[in-house]
Picture 1 (cartoon, rainbow, N blue to C red):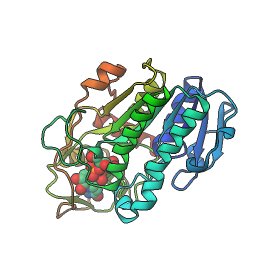
Picture 2 (tube, protein in one colour):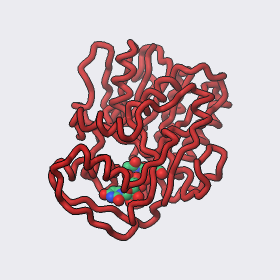
Picture 3 (cartoon, helix red, strand yellow):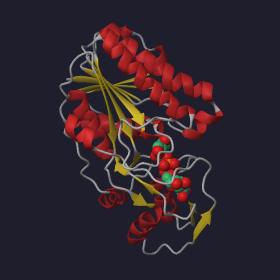
Picture 4 (cartoon, rainbow, N blue to C red):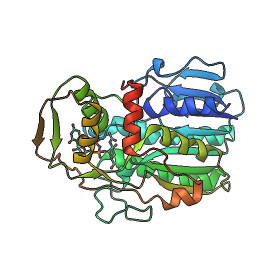
Length: 310
Ligand code: UD1
């Protein structure tokens, strides 16, 4: 089969590209290389790379039949979406419409969209199921939510099938550890590797549903190939269903860095930080037959073993 991966040179996209190639598929990566990096991608005879913004892609850019698009290209920083909402709007929402138009023009039967748990905002009822109220706290979360709605609307009108996967706290190799909005695991691993102190915002009892990038891309691959009625849409949480607190996380990491002696600083909670997050995973298990294989602890082991944090 032949799949397009937008944002395929980025953190999650490059892992998905590898996954699809390893399954024997042909992949066209579309990436403008704003945050993606060419060195994230392997040299492969079944891989075509198109350096282009998805917003200006034309149907003529794709000459071979396409069996599905995984749309991951985005400005993935919540902070950036707050500072530059219009730019985030173009990249996160208009870009989704551009992808939808490509599906229409090229008759692509399946669109799998990287949505986010940020669509929920600050929910207190755990685990979070897909039918709970959505109340995003950032332009990023709102753009992901409206993208899902556009996907569902046009799936019905155009006849392709749409899957939105609401990713919880993803981590793994190639996640950039040094940006203002780096995931906490990549940040802590990086600091510990360099013998530097870490900062916990809040008291460390907050929990997150940490999912390894290899599980995330397996879910995307299954969604791309799943038999879903044309014209219909499916929105699923993508997490492990298991919460880990930051204090537990630090204990796990300390086992891998026994030589790390720097201090743990406690600072005020981040503005808008949620206390607990945990995915209800029954829908993805039922509809896509997907379960995460990596626990936070085993995945951290894999991450450190690969030692390619960036
Ligand atoms: C994550 C996602 C975000 C998504 C949201 C949905 C990442 C990088 N971000 O945000 O895209 O919208 O889930 O729920 O996956 N922390 C520290 N010290 C640090 C860094 C972070 O204590 O140096 C804390 C944060 O304050 C937070 C927790 O660790 O309480 C997790 O932070 P982070 O990894 O940035 O992810 P979320 O804020 O949960």
